Length: 129
Image 1: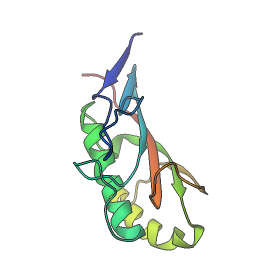
Image 2: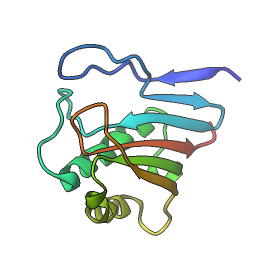
Image 3: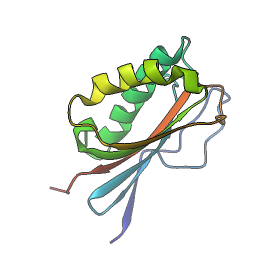
């Protein structure tokens, strides 16, 4: 089974190409790289955890679409929060995107590689048509 690399390597606000693919399809599974709250210009969005979580979730939707998938196809996420005190506000936004059928999830507090409050990666299951 050949791997399918989806999307071009992203650029950040410093215009440097990042050394990873936004997503990789391996058979019926789609592995989405960690998404941070960047806008189309590669800049971290202003605002607190709620605004940044919304941006990350929108970025996840965009990357999943490269494989013809949606948030409904996500079976696992891993979430990193810069500050554990943001957990409640983060959860409120996160739950709004997944509704009643939520994927398995791990969440931890960590210092992130960019000046962001949240990062999320995902694994989705979407059989090829």
